[in-house]
Image (cartoon, rainbow, N blue to C red; front, side):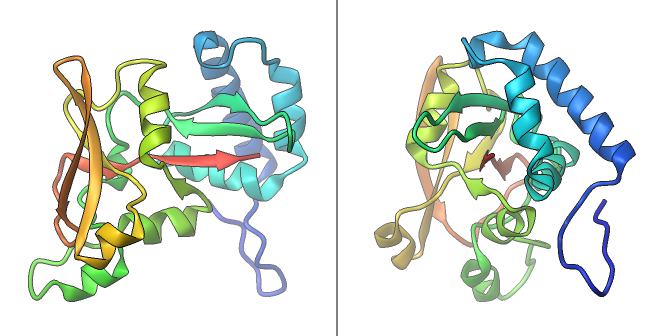
Length: 193
């Protein structure tokens, strides 16, 4: 999906991809107004069109199953905040351990990628636990799956990583070894545009 050539490292969508993505995001925006009360699509679209590399990242969120949507607007910076709003942890981002250090520490049965590396390659940030809890106020997410979240350095230093899910109408935060991975665990990201 990336337009690559040797003279440019900018990640950009073709006009057709851009149009298709904007239509998809607009439809989702209009269908889920409870996530972004008081915000206008035309202003979001203008901001997206002015930031082609962010639009590319948004497309990466979309094609990996994240179903990104606007969840807020930072009045100070003027940025719109997108989170992955798929009902379950994005399918294209599951079966990954937490980070590169965890991947390299595995002796056998290594996953293909890590949550931290994938997020960086996509140009997005892993949700923090607080952001994950804010997302859960907008709907019921991860009822059957779980999602890695940004792990505090003190926990990561000891070999752990944290993930969250929703069960029994409650949002839970858990821990695992950072090198663990499961078919039902991926990660959710955020993007500021």
